[in-house]
Amino acid sequence: MLLLILFALLAGAAAFLLFMFATVVDGDLTLVSRGPPRRERVDGKVVWITGASRGIGEVLAMQFANLGAKLILSARNKDELERVKQNILSKNPDSRVEVLPMDLSAGEKSLKQVVHAAESLFSNAGVDYMIHNAAFERPKRGALEESEEGLKMSSAAGKVPAPGQAIYSASKHALNGYFASLRSELCTKGIKITVVCPGPIETPQSSAAASSVQSHSSERRVSVERCVELTIIAATHGLKEAWISYQPVLTVMYLVQYMPTIGYWLMDKVGAKRLDAAAKKGNTYSWNLIFGGKKSA
Image (spheres, rainbow, N blue to C red):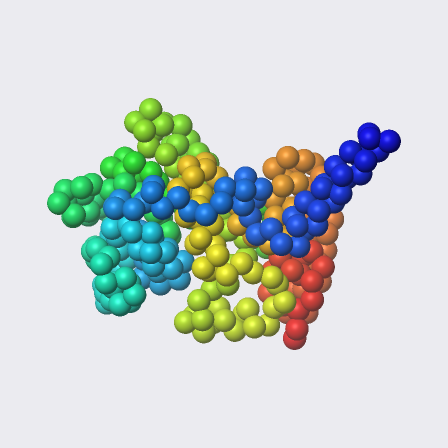
């Protein structure tokens, strides 16, 4: 009788966890089990964020400022960086924020000069966290070697090669492979690297085109603020990789990672057919179309 009760309790707990995973969870199980960001890991530390002039980069800057970090904001548009800085200071007057415009497509000599400039800010304190949020044409190793921790924003497409995303997915797979190798190469120097792979994310409403696309899709997306919160959790808890998404993308990522034959079979049988049907109707690609959702005309 006792064994039956114990079995029932275990079965109930398993059913509850499965229900939560299917309906509520917005990240991989390791990530969502870690609790809130560890403020002590970033309070007073220098955090350098590329692509900080808008979108995820801007929200990253604000949340790191809330945790007491000293910020270096980089992007090509200096005016937008100044806007982000003033926005941060209006909400966190005691924050220390520096603007450092840069173009990641510039030559190696130019990038080295920017790295040295970043190191000299805040009384030559160096850089504790390097957040690669901006897109770039080729990996920039030098900047990471000047920091203690590196975080790279990647994509779920770097884990799950979905129909209609061949070129984009290839670039993200290459990025994930590069930083996974770099992590092992730099670990003896005490440098840690976290790769974050978000699925569908709500883009800021300032992007009219992106907002228009989202308004015509019932695809469930993680908010930018929640994506950034989970990203900082991953970084401050020292995770090597983190996945951020709702279902069905999260389940597909698990299947491809741990049961690839089943995962790729699902992509072949379900994804390709729905993508083809969507193309004939003139609809654009979305995860929701691939896995059974509806899209308004």
